[in-house]
Length: 369
Image 1 (cartoon, helix red, strand yellow):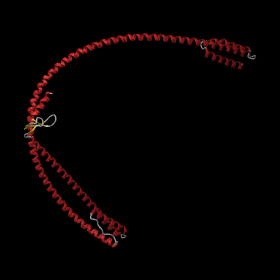
Image 2 (tube, helix red, strand yellow; image 1 turned 180 degrees about the vertical axis):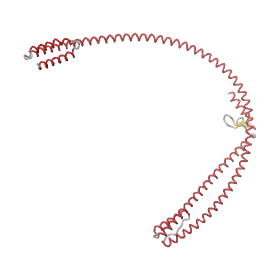
Image 3 (cartoon, helix red, strand yellow; image 1 turned 90 degrees about the vertical axis):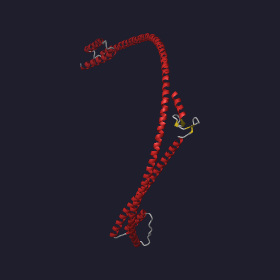
Image 4 (cartoon, one colour; image 1 turned 90 degrees about the horizontal axis):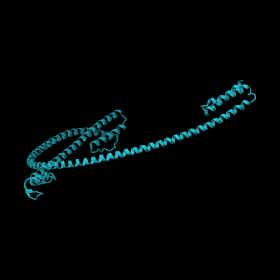
């Protein structure tokens, strides 16, 4: 009985799986097959083996029918899908043709309207342009008349103003020349005073430096003599040459004392030598500072003399140009009209010096233009 139940369950599961995967909508057709299998098992045909043949025949027939039915349905569904696709494409193409035709008609209508509007706008713009040109012509004629009147008035005012400015410029040039002469005289007096002060300061500095240098030289001479005596006592064959430069002499003395301290064995003598070396180094530092100070003072004095020379040269050139300008104010030949004139002006256009008549003609031409 257990074996029969197991076989029955296997047959049932297999048949349901096959049939459901092929034809899910006709599950009721499985009932006769299952009933026949169950009846055959209950009849005792299990021992004879006939149940297996019956079940296999039923399963084979079912599979065949299901396969045929499935193929038929697939063919019908494919035909229906293809027919629907073709119909949809035809309807879509017809709709596109109708839409294209409608859009072409709309575009043609829009183009016609745009062309009519464009022609109307062109006619309107031509009329506006004609009216604008007439107004501009009238306005230009009016402005030309006003410009001519204003140019005449400006020309007369400019001539009068130029004359006044030239007179004022001459007066200011004379005043500036007198002021420059007075300033130059004052500057020369200040320069002489400054030179006297510099000379006095130099003398004071020289005197103080000479006194200080004399004291340093005496101290250095004593130290050098002491060192030479010690060097002569320690090294009789050593050289006693001292350079002319005080700083180099100090360096040489420091080197000799350092060598003597390295060779000395007495601690007291070594201490004295190191004290002397320290004193010489401080003296060298002071001498170097004095030398640097003197060099800076000499450079500052040279730069100041150069600036004063350039300043005097510039002022002399300005006086020469002012004198030439003043001399040119007399009677001379105008380069424009080649006639002798007394009053000359600087041309506004080219910058050349011309006479008063030529200047008025230039202003008149400029006003007319």
